[in-house]
Image 1 (tube, one colour):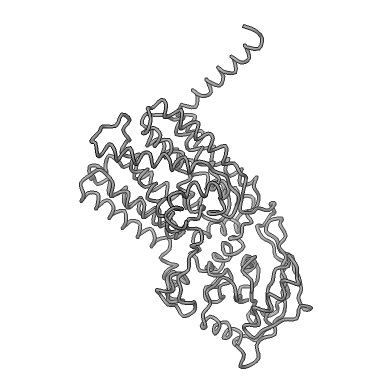
Image 2: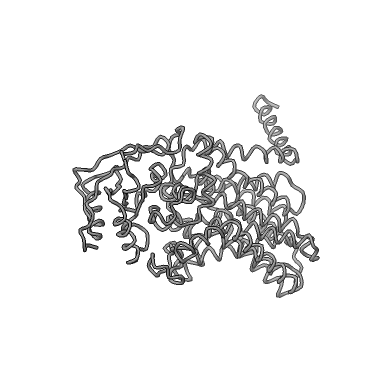
Amino acid sequence: MNLLQRPLIAFERAVAAAWEGLDRPAVLARALLLMPLLFGALSLLYGQDDNWDLHNYHLYNPYALLNGKIGYDLAPGQWQSYFNPTIDLLYYGLNALLPAPAAGFVMGWLHGLNFVLLAAIGRQLMPSPSYRAALLLALAGSLGPGFISEIGNTMGDNLIALTVLGALLLLLRAWPQLMQGRAAAWRAVALAGLLAGLGTGLKLTNAMYALALCLALLGVPATFWLRFRLALVFGVGTLAGIGLSAGHWYWRMWQTFGNPLFPQFNNIFKSPLAATIGIGDTGWIPQGLKEKLLWPFIFTYNPKRVIEIPITQLIWPMLYLAGVALALRLLRDAILARRPAAPLARPAGLMLLFFGIAYLIWLNLFGIYRYLVPLELLAPLALWLAVQRLMAPAAGRQVAAWALLLATVAGWSGASWGHAGWARHATTVELPPLPAPAQNIVFTVHGDPPMSWLVPSFPRALAFVALGGGFPESPAYAAKAAAMMAARSGPFYVMLQAEGDDQKIWPAAQEVLGRYGMRFNPEDCLKYRAAVGSSAHPYQLCPVQPPRTGSK
């Protein structure tokens, strides 16, 4: 043995010992405690959340709920002003109680709890006890580009994923009782439905996961009536969860606007304050059958088809191919009544069935990658289970391990939705003198960049009205704005961005205000400092000349 071989052999033994050491319950237990803390630290490393949606409604909506601004203002956060603000109360409250960096750490820690749930799901689905596999698959899932891009931020997808994974875990843990229809099964299914419903009420797009879980229960290998009752109990639990997390908001929207989902689905509810149209962002959905069949390959090659930020991922085409191969194999075995050499455990079948149904719903309703975060978290585990069924165990582990390693490494794009440096307060806003804010109105006239994040810093009595933005205005909306002006003595202002070319900003604002018979003198505009964290986002206020009598 020469001098070069000795360190190589020692290194190989150390790696082998470390690899074996991962397969211990104590190591997994420590990881369950440590990983959420690491995600909290990652949130600190990223910096203050400064994403577009935060500017638009994640700060305004909880402020409006807590300060009586629902119906007092008119859509300063565009049509998203009327999303259920319950989920945003968390971030709003953390920043009210803690320094901004501490609030960011807590958000990252909460998002990191998805790792804990993933590891628990993996432990339920491993064909043989493997702490190492559960740990590494949870880690691979938690390093997906969509999930990582939202660590510590307010967009809600990482937080809502906790309800999806939690509901799935409850069903998997109750599997033996599900098969026998015991009382414990009904409690678990009802609780899983309740959790899925809570997530749906907090973020309506989560409905696809609640529906997918409900339909997956119809695939449980039991009598038809047992399957039907399981799905029914889950559905009732889901409705109860929606009622708990969103019932108060839907009732408030119904009382205020005559539409519980205002202004969405206004083609059905016909609230006079919004145009009678359905609102939805359908531009991300694949076009035609060919695109739908090849969608994972298409959005892997061109991520801009499903997401606004640059990401790289490889796991979806791998998983798609494995899923198609598994479906064909199961179909062949069923037709030929052939007993598979590597049977798929039935709880794993439930998870994969849920996964496939949820993907198909997403494909046809949304096509937006952010809404796939719960499935992205589960994707490594799903690929692992599918490959184990397709191949002999030893070969399957090798192929799945290398595929997951490649997919995980490729997914580190470092893309995010926007961050700033940390400051003591999440936002700081310099205010103009407003001696009688109850007599004033501030108009906003452009939806991008959004301005409503500034509203919580102004006096509560000041009214904000968005004109010509993203809200589907109706004649009654314009009449409401005119009535608000008539009820106040003024002065009135228009709030504009102060970043960019004023010679483009001012004419665009004049054009929007002109539709309502108003105008302003650019020479009267005054600029003020404002920032999210350490990132400056100044704004300007310009006194508005109100419409003459008889003008629109």
